[in-house]
Image 1 (tube, helix red, strand yellow):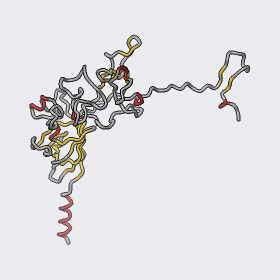
Image 2 (image 1 turned 135 degrees about the horizontal axis):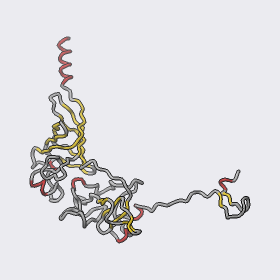
Image 3 (image 1 turned 30 degrees about the horizontal axis):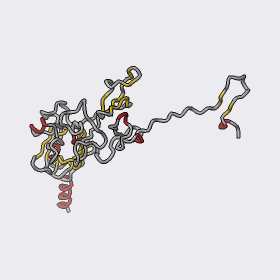
Image 4 (image 1 turned 90 degrees about the horizontal axis):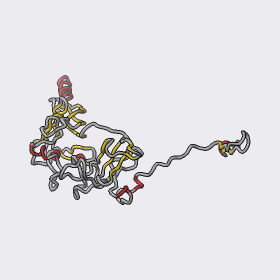
Length: 272
């Protein structure tokens, strides 16, 4: 009986425990760059996390294998990391990557198992480019170049295109038709030469088949490419209805006559 208890206790100590690893990616690598389903590793904070083979990494509206974070999608040479990262065999998502000019790693949330040996093995990996947020009012829409500005200031009765924060949607288009965005048609200022519909990083694309961006009211966001934003069948005006301002209820209307004469009272205030 004593031997059985000791054996059970030893086995219990070997069970893995759940671990949540959250933070900036410091380093990241793939074991076999030629294998789309290759395993790899990721250093987040003080943890060296093993990324098992076949695991899909979740991006805001996309899923890729670890290897696909380092190389373009076959047949779509500009769909992967920037050219400077490809030249160094880097993803550009790790803090120490030489091609990462921002010197900020992507933000990772990893649900993992911490083994009795000390190894941390990922079961679910979610990445976002940065933990940045901006709230504001759309004050300008450039229909020709396909971008918005938030929190701009009036200039002579019109909103100035040079004020406020420029906002472009990451809309590189579907895999079967790259470069032709579903929600925008973009060009001009801020677009890198050869980019897919001005996408800064196609890996962090929006969903090309469904709306993944909405206004605070819940209406889906798209930017029409027609003059004045009217008549674009792919981005109809019904997606952004003009707010209807309802005047306050009128209880009493006084026409300037002496009190008590010709006072028009709302039926809501007449005793029943």
